[in-house]
Image (cartoon, rainbow, N blue to C red):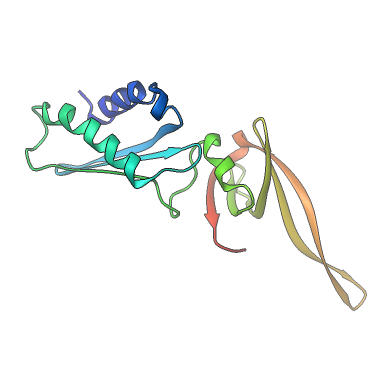
Length: 157
């Protein structure tokens, strides 16, 4: 059995439990000795939840014959350097600056101010010249989630 599919199946069952219904799988990476499971939650994720998920998975993985006895299981959040993968991840980043690469190849740097259904409401700052004056302005952008290729949360723009 494919280890990634097996872990996804196990977590799907776990995430049906009331205490874990706010959590979801982002992705799994596996090599000969290391399995990395990246999960997130609707309100973020704690070390305690990662530990509980790890303890849940370990007995199942220990039973697999094709897995080395000395494998390492790491369960964590995807981290700031990883792109947002699901629309479900965006609400916890309201008010934060994002760098969005669109499917058409555009790169947009803006603040996430709202989410309406499958639309991201963004606020982009720009400078407009009026004669010798430079005025700082803001414009709202509306982007459908299906237009997004990758989104990174940025510390500043």
